[in-house]
Amino acid sequence: ETIAICNIRGVRYENISSAETAAIYQEIQEANMEAVTLEKEPKIAVYIPPNTLPWDDAVSMALEYAEIDYDRLWDDEVLSGKLNDYDWLHLHHEDFTGQYGKFYASYRHTEWYQNDVKVNEAMAAKHGYQKVWQLKHDIALKIREFVSSGGFLFAMCGAVDTIDIALAARGIDVVDAMIDGDGIEADYGDRLNYDRCFAFENFKLKTSPFEYEFSDIDASDYSKLRGAEGDYFQLFDFSAKYDPVPTMLTQSHTNIINGFMGQTTSFFRDKVKKSVIILAEVPSQSDVKYIHGNLGKGTFTFYGGHDPEDYQHMVGDPETILDLHKNSPGYRLILNNILFPAAEKKKLKT
Image (cartoon, rainbow, N blue to C red):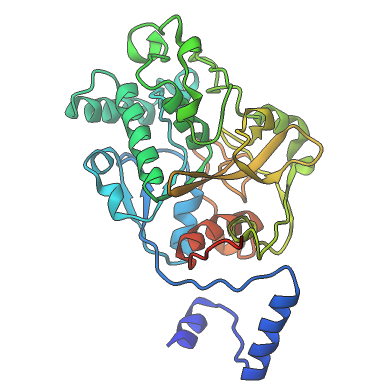
């Protein structure tokens, strides 16, 4: 049955003898490798709004390309406790600050933007919130509780910094009047609580609705200066036997990967908490691309950028055809995160 599935899906395989198997295990013992058992199929959820938005989602596409089952959920399900039914949650181009992705300046007159506002306002009103940002702050907290209780969180693009902004600013109005009808609380900067954040600290918010940026966490401008030909990032090497988790997350057939932009492209190193593991950096630069950390009983992994095979994916661009990128190292990192929750948990050597 397995061979038949491989043939149907175009997956290369080899039949090996017992002696060859033993030789592989011997090589693993002698090198920076480790055998990891995939013992369960994780239940996967992707946080996706019900309304259609004009951009793709790299993780949803990767899941569908790899024929991995997942469920879609949004605010109703999060507030009702449905996250507890899942092992792994993905967030992509989401805005947990309640500013509709900061698309106000460029797209406020478009049908899709106006519909997005209506859908979010209706959801907030349904659950008794006066403002969308109040709803999103509570959604961010529910996701934090999911991770703290043992869940796995993977986030890309704008979701990475907006969830930490929402957690730091919980209960504080940092949304401009053009977005929510009233002003920003004047002393918000002194009230941010970075202890609630997953990965970032000591960041400053960018609250103008005319600036396509949430905070000074993001290093997108640096990527623009490097350009598509000069923008790449490098995976770190870890000890497979003593650091199996970061080793799994950085598995790839190359350790140098072409960069790709997003609303949040990469993260300034000085905004990353010291407790967070840096998995990949932009060499000789002040920004990092791929990070991982623990929170309570769970873990989170944040990956900057929007689409690993589209350097600058613009609003309205067609989605990437993954059949044309079967050996994409950038997409491989996404799939590493899906395999990670399936791995057998081993006690650390002490």
